[in-house]
Length: 107
Image (cartoon, rainbow, N blue to C red; front, side, top):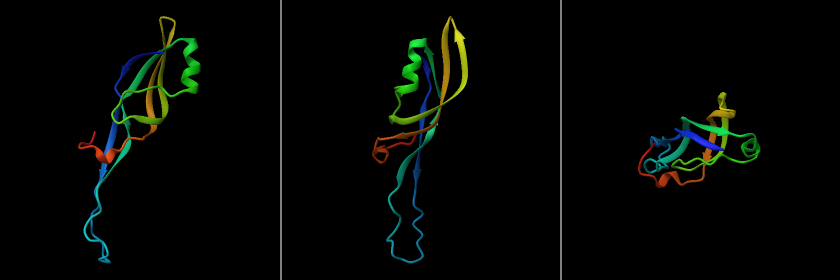
């Protein structure tokens, strides 16, 4: 399997607590938390018939920061180029095991 292009970019959102609690028990807002909201972009791969088993049974390794896990792909485009199957894969859902709260910036 050959990666033709990879434009995947994780989307990280920051949740800020409004800190407005009517019961007075909370002393100010809770700490902000970052979470993975999704991923935009696509990865285009070129497959030979022997690669289809890997595509079905294994995760495609992506180079993103943070690292994406449990990726469920959506295939908006399939083509045959020079006798090889070419797929455009977009992320439908994904997770990450990285500690997003340790990041200084959002994506």
